[in-house]
Length: 299
Image (tube, rainbow, N blue to C red; front, side, top):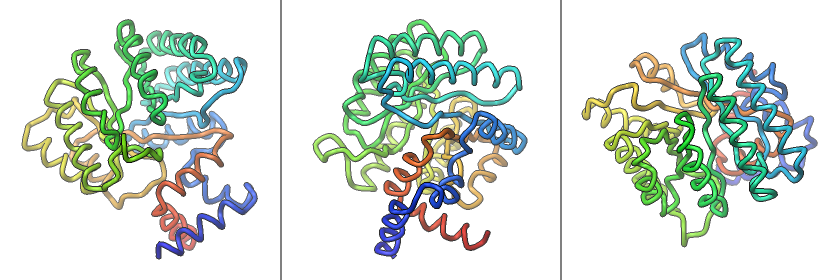
């Protein structure tokens, strides 16, 4: 089965974009703002909240970084005018980090100005390890002026426990995820159960110290373990939310969580950079190929 999945990934990478698109669009909410906002509306109607992410990273010109910033600002306006239950997630390299750090900071603060005016929230996504320090430094700089901003910590990074302690005094809103980038053994856990244990520890530490936690995982073991712990600890339901990627099925868990009164946020990527995103997801999680093929044959 592993060989079959690997072969399918290789095949997809060799196909022209137009052939891959039907597969990818099960996990990407289209290429336009209208496509993505339509998905948000549909999910809101079902009881889910959402976060929008314009696909892409590593802007290589001032114009590109400014354009993506203005696109995000426009999204905040539309979300507010349409009364959607949705916030925004962004990668700092998309705003210019790594190309022009001063520009990235300027764009980030412009975005936060709009978020504050529109009474919304900004999630600063965590990228691979070369950007971890810069991302946390910028987050702390933002947090001093804007309450509605939060970072992401990756459970597989060995430093994440200390990073959480570093930001706990600011009563943060933190998304905890496993981590998706390939990182060396020297800085990242590689064993599945060790990563799970780190994930659980980060969530429990955050919730026990007054942080708002986004529990971002499709791992039903983690969902079930943490839901049980939350119930046993009588953690208020307004202190956390479960978060999942758009299009990745986990049985009936999402509906179950909603029925139990938990908040569930769906991370919705969209934009013309869909191909790179989809191929990365396929390579990082070969199980997605099984989902795709199963859904495809049912179509």
